[in-house]
Length: 51
Image (cartoon, rainbow, N blue to C red; front, side, top):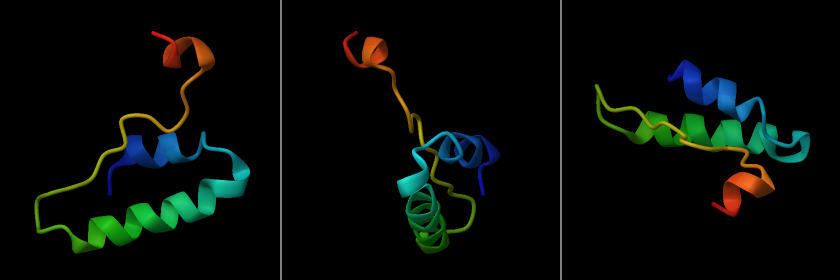
């Protein structure tokens, strides 16, 4: 698994963090060898969203 994505998941709201992690693991397990999913963003501030 991708440590950067795991770190990003840890910044998600506590209500969705576990579910998000489970989806991430499920998706990664379905990908072929050598291919990994990476989350570019989990949390974006209002300022970042307005750019």
